[in-house]
Image (cartoon, rainbow, N blue to C red):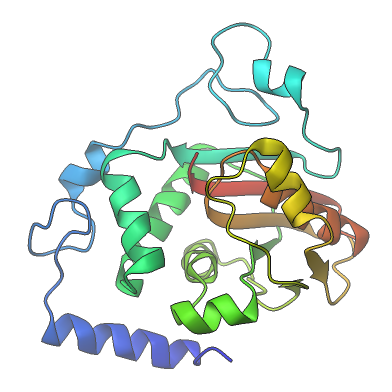
Amino acid sequence: MSAPRWFQYARLALLDLIFPPRCAGCGRAGEWFCAKCVASLHRVREPICGRCGQELSSRSCLACRRHALPAYLHGLRAVAHHDGQLRKAIHRLKYERLSAIAEPLGQLLCDYLDANPLPFTLIVPVPLHDERQRERGYNQSALLADVVSRRTQQPAQQNILVRTRHTIPQVGLNEHERRQNLIDAFACVQRVDDAQVLLIDDVCTTGSTMSECAAALHAAGARSVWGLTLAR
């Protein structure tokens, strides 16, 4: 079971006092993710595919022609490409227990939504399996979702979407293997009738995880599901 949110915030504030922030990207003192690193992000630029969110090199989306998103996932969007300082920051959030970096990274998601509004009435993070969350100490997607919830004043539900089995890591798997690995891996444990869901994760590669989560939310009554990630 994760710690209460007030405890998480108090812990982060105490850590800031004991260990002053250093940028997770460049190491500069003063901020967890500095303005210089934010400015260096390799942003996903228009024109993009209206469905999968990939940058378009022609009038039609090659990714969607090869493998279109399922109907219950209305679309995918990402702030930037998974490289440079953003990749470093996400790695530190996921694997080095630098949970404080979730605040500025979550703000990147909010800034994206300000510039590119998506319809949502409910925010849901992509879940980790209980075993992996115990190893990591937290679900990084839930931390990001909490930032988006506080900044947008829309509710976040962190426990309605669950992993029903412990899957192997997606890293290193091809597209077919990723989809096979996640079949029936998620379930929505309560109804979300007529909700417009914003599904939050840190990184999207093929969209397999988002698609399977969206299927579970759709089965529980969601009207629409949009996926938003930091990196693509």
